[in-house]
Image (cartoon, rainbow, N blue to C red):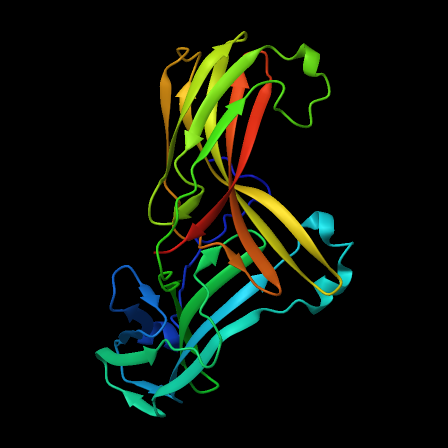
Length: 321
């Protein structure tokens, strides 16, 4: 048998896994609210249970539940240098913050333990519970955080659960605001070479720009004539977020969603329905405060085959009824 000079085979690796005491105990913490949709309004009771599951007895230094609501503001990269003072001083705007001690220091038995809780969602004075909204530069969020404090040798356990706040329904009746529109080369703005544009005539209407957030935006669009072939027609929903302070305000528009309502060279004179649902969490009732604003717009975008892009903008006012 040939043997390589100085060749030694290493012994097979020995995989030894040591389980830490915490892993052996396998303690799990969870927060659950009663409503499946997790939607609440000002004045209601937020209720649920904290669930602790463990194989062994758990010793702790107290179990606490905190309800928090805050508005986080952020500037876009293009405005950071302009409003440097804002960046240095911008702190989350606290809407609500409340903590209760659910269980005093002691021991929990092995198995599953459920601890019920109730939190009143009630603002004091003239303060308002803004609606939950996940934006780019403005973010309004509400959470429940459960903390199980333990000794120095064991790591504290924390579990966070987001719940949704809807603003109270607006009193009174919403007045519809229908809008008729006509789009031609002459009606377009910010056009450098108007003479080079192909001739077209697009008519239509939006049933209302005052919109109930739970109902779709509706209307109709008709391509009466177009010299160039139509490639696509789209509805673009845009959020316009403004935030700032005494030093100045930054206003940024970003797309929420884009829905194609026609594909290809549509028949002339054929009514095309406009129908767009407002997405949950990414829209909220139009909001204006001292430090920030959240507004919405819709763009009707027509793309022609010669790469001409035609855009018509309509401001929207959203409310909850």
